[in-house]
Image 1 (cartoon, one colour):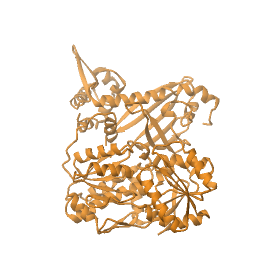
Image 2 (cartoon, chains in turn blue, red):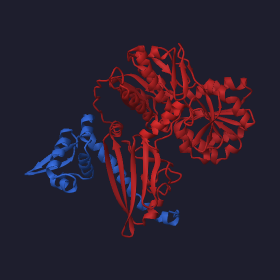
Image 3 (cartoon, chains in turn blue, yellow):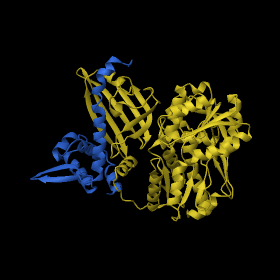
Length: 109
Length: 474
């Protein structure tokens, strides 16, 4: 893949937000993405999605008149971004396990 | 510079101050909260061990604690393997806590991670002159190399702000040897394929030797910027930095005076630079009245040094010559301190640097000395300008400079001065122009004679907390 094109596509804060949403979800409709992006309107979100698609960062699936987006499943970007996301999530998931022991040896906060 | 922010969130059944207190406590709270961190205060060294490799192996994310709001927020500012901030926020949620993590990934980090995961990235063609930096962004060398990338970036930004080379900017491509010679050789080939005709190598000598062999017929100029055992200069190979014999000659008498004894124990990692330094010690120290009472070598990446520390104790040494590097040097020093070795002897560690000292922690550096051409606290006008620019550009929590990382700044500056002098960036022309030359650098005047022998002032310095203070200069 062309990492320069990918990162040019990431240069925009709205596109980074979109990717951040998609990194956490399997697939999102344009409407669902637009609901969570409050800084620009739905038309702008569509335009940003096109840039991300051309850069090979997201893939598009059409179902009737709806379009769904996900991080490109064949792409390196998906592997890296979903990996990082999973690694951070799994890192936090064990915090709760340590709580009983922590309460026993509670450090001054 | 565009940056992507990844977020993750978790609800924990305990109040915020309890969850906050788990950070750095080693309580089995997952890799994020089990960060290695002596104290959760601004400026404290912190290492997160993230399962990022395809086989689940741990990759160290190395940095410092930035802002702390007790019970509410911890900011980690990291430099390795990429620069960015990871912020943990704690908010009351019912009777528990909602922990929210935000972590930044910049373009170099994105590319590093893709390569690390085995993806092949297209090599972009560079229109401008491109210089390579081979450094250690991962593996035990990640500590001493923490500021190397920043140093190359700063030097090139200065050069480009002044008009670059023949009015064109000079570009930088960075490779990571993962503190492994074979990986270093692969990365050097990648840098050459990206158009680098000169590669600065700021890794262990073991990697420099492997890269030099791999690039034998490439026509690429290799400049080893940091301290090394020498022996490979000539043609398209330039070795800057300090040499073991000159370092030992400078430090031997001051160390023996300070220790009140003459018995030396040699301990270090098992590769070419420590072995060459020990060979120099066997030659230099007896001539200056020292006696050798023992030697131990351990492979790079060792984490348990009890046997070495016991051997030092049994030997009755007055001074340990420690040639451990990077993470090994930090671990060895901490284990020596735990055993109280600093009450019995002093340590001379030629490759000890300020960012490794930060990892050791202020208490455990007692008795530690270095000998080098540069320390961050060096009082020269050029060094104070460098430090000011460095802090302005990379922030107050960027890793400290050291003779190992600052040598990268000087390597870029010398390459550029030589390219101007030669009127070309042709590798042979640049190599020629680097010889028989004199450079005014942050560490002072550095000379290279016709045979590539480096001349510079050498300083013996003592660790005071996590800083190095010069005690004798030669």
